[in-house]
Every structure is written in structure tokens, then in C-alpha cells.
Amino acid sequence: MKFFKKNRKDKNKVVEEEEGAGLYQPPNAQVEMKKYQTKYAEPGFANNPTAKPGDGREAYDVENVRNTKNYDNIEGSYAQMKEDDPDYLAINGEPVYVVKQKRGYLSILFSITQTVVLIGMMIQCNVAPLKINPMVGPYPDALSYWGAKNAYNIIIDKEYWRLFSPILLHAGVFHLLCNVSVQLDTGAFFEREWGSIIWLLVYLGSAASGSILSVIVSPNSIGVGSSGSVCGLFGAKIAEALCRCKENTKTEMKALSYAILCEQFASTLCSVILILVFSFIPFVDWAAHVGGLLGGFLVGMFIFSLRIKTMKWKIGMAIVSLLINLIFFGVGLSYMFNQSRGEVAEEMGDVCEYYKQFYEDYECRCRMDDADVDG
Image 1 (cartoon, rainbow, N blue to C red):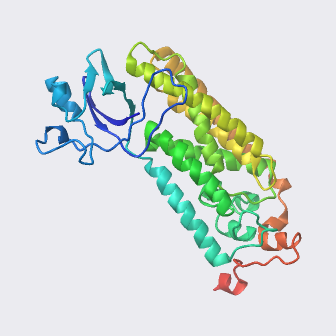
Image 2 (image 1 turned 180 degrees about the horizontal axis):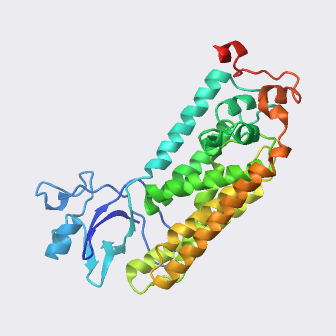
């Protein structure tokens, strides 16, 4: 299966370049597809007289093919397009699934940042015993000092940035590996499909909704991790499938895109069910998962409703989804600041002393001395 980045220059002309870094082959796709090793195509490679098959690059000058219709000039391959479907592209007779960008740049950036932050916490604050942190990571108070979800700091101290900062933190190595593996695989592919801007809006919106619900449900606990945002990406994919469920499939390219979307919808539902099941085991913040999933779904409904082809459905869905988003986030924030305030324990203002109540040998490795604060 090949992936191409599409750059639309005007209404009647499409330039597509071959994509690299990854394969996607739905297990039960309705369109027969073969596996291909994808490589990034250098523009003009096909017209290079010195190019030879097997020299390490496989490339197709698609713009030249569209203009000359001389498919046999493509070195070692056959590129096919159709005038009645400007998005259609086939290589060696196999349909191509077009994505928006070459890589999931933000997925990679966030994953690297999350890894560096965890290493920094473990170096500065040491690694807690397994009976305190079974994820192999720092002490819980270190997580709070570095920006974890702490209801006391958010509501009482008005540190609102903590609604987003937990996505950069992880409880330990195992926690990080689980989230980053999904983020770099499925999350990065979604980013290639949607584009980085839409991906970021869903990611941050899910982070906020996950933190809000977590504060409401578990006001006296520390919460970290990007799992709420990852769940939000799945929620947005479900929203995209619903917005595109009546999509036209008369052309081969649209049929391929719709078949892949159906497979993604089925696999996403399975992933969501598994995540929700494992969300209720100890040391996992199920509220952040559920909140992130709901937030991502609602943000995705608004974004992808704008892509509906039928104008009356586009306007109607956009207005309804926008109102639901405003109600969801508005009610959540209102309840968090008004109702949850009285449920927050005063001890959460000093996380180190709070955890000392539960562990006799608890050490406050990251706590700032009063002298340091005053100075």
C-alpha cells in the first residue's frame, strides 16, 4: 500500500508526491491491495536519464504523467490517473491512499518531549520504590511539582495551565512506553491523514476535557499522562467516521478511502473498548480516559462536520456540535470550580506531606526548602 502527500494548487490540478515512513493495510479492506515499501519521491526523478531501477529510490513524477499521459516513461513503474476522478492515483495497477503529510511531526515531537521530561524527573527526584510507584518512575510529589493534575493547585492556586501540562508527564517507564507506542503508531497516522493543526486541536482539547473530568471525579489524586489525549484521538476518528458515513463512493479513490475509514472505525471501537476495560485497574485514571474520549469525539464532530459535502448537513452538524462543545466544556468547568472546590483536601497543597500519611519510608526528593522559596 502506498501513501502519497497531496498538495492541491487549484481546483483542476493536483500534484502528488510519494510518501514514505509507514504502511497501512486494513486487514479486511474492501479494495484488494498489496504491500509496498514506500519511499519519498524526489520531484523530477522520473525524467532523470541516469535513474535506474533498484538504485534505492522508487519515484513517480505524477505531474509529468498527468501532462504527457506517457505512462511508459515512468522508470520501472506504471502510474495511472483518471480524468473523472482528480484524486485517483494508481501505481502498478494498485490504488493509492492519499494522506496530507509525510510524517506525524507533532506525534514525534510530543513523544520526544515526554521521554526527556521523564528522564529529567528521574534524574532530579530519583526513582521511587516499586511499592510506591510500580510504573518505575519518580515519587508522586515530584509529578505534582513538575505540573501534574492537582485539583488544589488548579482550583485554589488558579494554576489553570495544569489542565494541559499533565500530557507531558508520565508516572514511569512502563506508563510512557504504553502511551508513546500508540502515539507514534496510530496517533501519527491520524496526524498524517488530518494534518498537524487538526491533530493538535483534538490532542489539546482532549487533554483539557480529561483533566476536567479527573478533577471532578478524583479531586484528591495526582494525575499525569497523555492517555487522555490519545483516547481523544480515537474519539475524533469515530466522529470522522460518523461525519463521513454517507460519503459518495462512486469513484475508485473514494471507494478506497471509505473502505479504509470503515476498517479504522472498527479497529478504533475495539481499541476504545480495551482502553475502557483497562481504565479501571489500580493506578490508572479512568476519568481522564473517559473525559479525553468524550472531548476528542466532540471536538472531532465539530471539525469534521465542516467537511460534509451537503451544505445543509454541514451547517446543521456544525452548529449542533459547536453548541454541544460549549455546553460540555462550560458545564464541566463550572462544576469543577464551584462544586469540586469543597471536596479538595487541604493536604493536597503539600503533596509530600500528603503521601507521607500512607508510606512510612516516603522521601520528598523534589521538595523545595522554604529558604529556597523565600530566596
